[in-house]
Image (cartoon, rainbow, N blue to C red; front, side, top):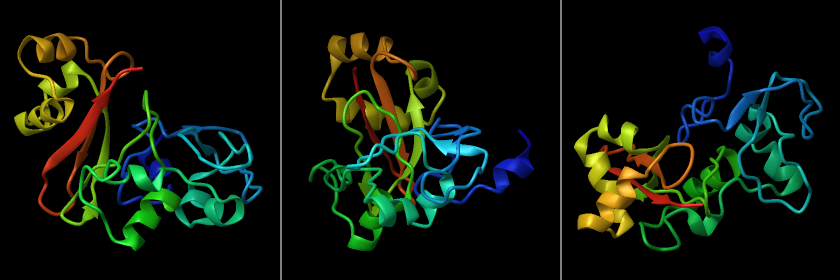
Length: 186
């Protein structure tokens, strides 16, 4: 895949690289919303009364067509801000994250970190190896949110993997660059 091919994808300010996070994959499937063969399909979670899993193109998510046509949500509105644990955000931000931003696959209910009265940018799934190569503040944010400390944290962190087991979902504030997110186990 060339950079030119990737540059044709719509831009999502809260999920800037949905190809590397695995939310969009190359596909010869036709989009159910626009009936077009676009070369990409969304494989993240979709909440909808109609079965539209793996049948939406990035463009119909970005422009809101999938939401308008099927009532599709890509993030549970209550999960933006972790059900009240993190800051609430204005309705236009909530609508953009829930209805026009691709989500990501998690082991449990996906949650979207918020900070500075805005949704944060989703960076991806991380394990121990990836977190150890990040800014120490990213590691500390996941550790704090986990609620573990001492030997309990060491045990949990040593098993953390981006693809299985405990996984960290990392975000960064668009305004002040604060790290945030959470981890969970399948």
